[in-house]
Length: 99
Picture: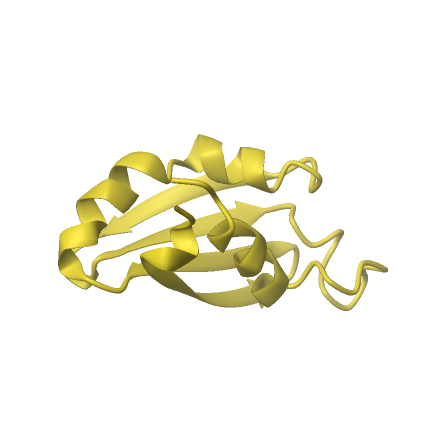
């Protein structure tokens, strides 16, 4: 099962930082997402983007996790030559995570 089967995401970019929220479709799936989608697993899933730092924030009342990914955008969206390294592309990679 993929993360995308139980959650969707919202993203944002600011400078060299990407922000990805993972939101459970159903409240009963949030505990499993909370357990399995760690900052370390997110960093591993995005391993080609180095160096990055991943910080996870929990929003249990929303059934969501928020990941702040520093260093993910090659200096920033407008400075990077990587056209697909924006938040929406990164969230697609993250939602492909095996649970």
